[in-house]
Image (cartoon, rainbow, N blue to C red; front, side, top):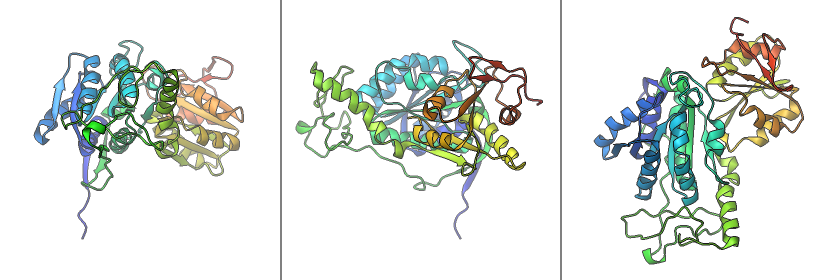
Length: 398
């Protein structure tokens, strides 16, 4: 008989830490911040016991720089934070994008801006995750909706990071971070773990940014005999700065295209009842929990509504949204902000259907009743800002 799978009752933050260790993370640098601190506490306790290293840094700027340095030393590295700390990390994230250094950044979102409401959930950082650092750069952002998904998506974040030599962000909120669910822990070897591709040439011949056949260059580790230059300036294949305008153009395009041209491999979505749907719901993260309940409830009453739930929010699933927009009359977008992804859905729909947003920023999660009312065309104390955006408030009791 096969051995029964191990099950545990875990918070999302606990699952994230366990998954990072499963994926091979052996370095963590961070600064405590609600609601992500449990990740740091667990990594502080676990890593030294398995040959890893933990450092509490003086702030989030130092934290992102530390994991970039550890990754250059050959270690899989991660940090975790929330909105204010994520803001401080943006220059370091840009550096990791330019220098093509794999690392994972977890942002457990809370209400803001500024200090906001530290113990309340939000989905306010999705645009910061895409555009927080300056310049054109690759952005890979994963959005789990459950504790189990927090585990699997953390492993996937490390795999994508190592495959494409890029920082990857895991974006969930206070509810997912602190909610407890019974989850199944994978056995060693059960889930694929991608290891870093290393050079097979002589150290003297190694060029860290030499790209051939559209593939990502292997990354040597400092301390293993390879000496190479790393800079945030535009650089030639050998890593040294270059002012060649042709090379600058090519580098910008290459950094973005290594993700854009592999979107089909990076995208991950859940589709529910979309085959014959006349109304679509596009929901991510904790709001997707309410959306799924609402869709199932209305389906049981014969209403043809379907759900598209992205687990990859960046790169944005344009093609899937466009396909849905061709079929449905309306797309409902519930999110705990004032419309950050609403406009992306509207853009990707290309005017083929109506798009309505349900926005909530009072630190309470969006209730299934709000989504059901929007689908049924009910408005309770609705304010239209602008004419094509619907904000629903205080609809929990229908």
